[in-house]
Amino acid sequence: MNETTAAREFPAALDKLRSHRSVRQFTNEPVSDECLEAIISTAQRASTSSNLQSYSVIVVRDPERRKQLSPLCGGQAQVTDCPVFLAFCADLNRAKVLCEASGYAFSARFIEYFLVAVTDATIFGQTALAAAEALGLGGCMIGAARNHPEEISQLLQLPPLVFVVFGMTLGHPRTDQKVTLRPRLPLAAIMHHEQYDSSKWQSAHAAYDGAMKATGIYDGRRIDLSRRVEKWQDVTPEGAYGWIEHSARRWIDPAAQRRQLRPFFDKQGFGFE
Ligand SMILES: Cc1cc2nc3c(=O)[nH]c(=O)nc-3n(C[C@H](O)[C@H](O)[C@H](O)COP(=O)(O)O)c2cc1C
Image (cartoon, rainbow, N blue to C red):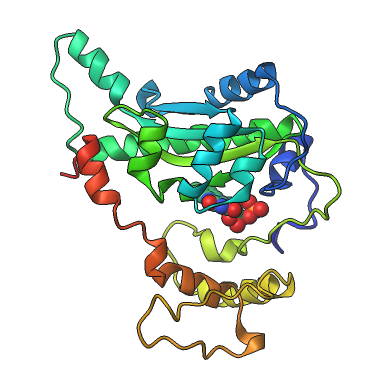
C-alpha cells in the first residue's frame, strides 16, 4: 500500500493481490495434490512469450530432499519446514528436443533466449503464488536457490538448458503471528508518465526510507560487511539506518552476488551473444 492509493476501496480480486506478504512459517497441514494442481494449472494461464511456455516447475515434497535443499538455499529453515518446495525453472530443454525432432538445429546462444525463459518462469512463478494466496495458502520466493546452481541442478536432476530461477516455499500460514504488510515505494518513485522523470524519485525514496524504518524491520538486523568488504566500517548512526542504507549494503555485498552464475550458464548451454 502507498500513500496515493491507501484510501481507495478495491474489488475483492485486487484486495487479495494487495494483501500479499511473504509467508515463511507454516502449520503442519499438508498441501493436497488437488490444491497444488489447481495452483500450477492457474499459473499456466499467465501470459507467456509467443506461447512458448519456456518453464518447468519441480515439486519437492520429500522431507529428505528438502533437507538437502536447505543448505543449497542459504540454510533457510523455511525450506525444510514447509510442506512443499517448488523450484521454478527456465526451460529450453523441451524447445531443443522438439526443434530437433522437427529437423531443426537449436542453440540457445543469444541473450534473448535466456530472457524469454527467465521472464516466462518468473511470471509463471508469481502467478502460482497469487493463486496459492487466493486459496488461503502462503509462500515465499527463494532467490537463494541460485546460491549453488550446480549442486541444486544435480539434486533435481536438471538436464542442460534448464536452471532454477527461484524456489518457493508453500504451505498453510501459521495464524498465531502478527500479520504485517511490508510497505512499498510511493508511486512517484517507480511510475513515470510519457518519459522517464528523475526529478521526483529521490524525495520519494527518502519518504519510503522513513516508512520502512518505522516498521522496526531493521532493528537488530543491520548488514555487517566488515568481514566481506575491505576497510569497511559501520559509520551509520542508529536512527539513520533505513531502507536506503540496508539496500545499499545488499547491493554491494560481494557474498550476495552469486558470481559463479556465468560459468554455470555457459556449462548449462546458455549463450550471451
Ligand atoms: C525473486 C525473489 C527472491 C526472493 N528470495 C527470498 C529468499 O531467498 N528468502 C526470503 O526469505 N525471501 C525472499 N524473497 C522475498 C522478499 O524478501 C520479499 O518479497 C520482499 O522483502 C517483500 O516482502 P513481502 O513479499 O512480504 O511483501 C524473494 C523475493 C523474490 C521476488
